[in-house]
Length: 135
Image 1 (cartoon, rainbow, N blue to C red):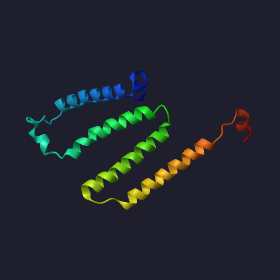
Image 2 (cartoon, rainbow, N blue to C red; image 1 turned 90 degrees about the vertical axis):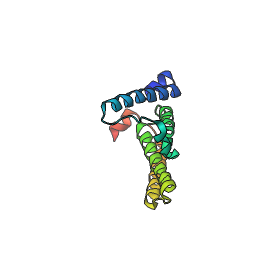
Image 3 (tube, rainbow, N blue to C red; image 1 turned 120 degrees about the vertical axis):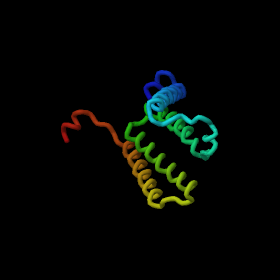
Image 4 (tube, rainbow, N blue to C red; image 1 turned 30 degrees about the horizontal axis):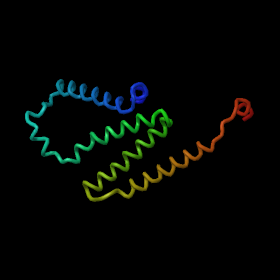
């Protein structure tokens, strides 16, 4: 995704990511035992919030395409994990009316660890080969 976004642009890369995903989703659907709904009336029975997953996916890919060349894959993975964790907490709160205290505390601890690691990396100075050989 990131390489495609670098070549043609962030939004165009995201667009083609989803076009290719749609194509293969249709191919897999055709070869699966599932059938495509004969009417679109069944879509109206699905809660509106269920469709927001597609929007959140697009937002995630756009941000990911933007951030990937700018930060390490380690930090990108942590940011995605933290985002999914807190979004899961929000969804649980909206749908179930409660949030897990343990997940909130765990997410905050991961965030604190990430912030600490970012500060350490920022303050870390580089050294030359002779300094490494002395150690």
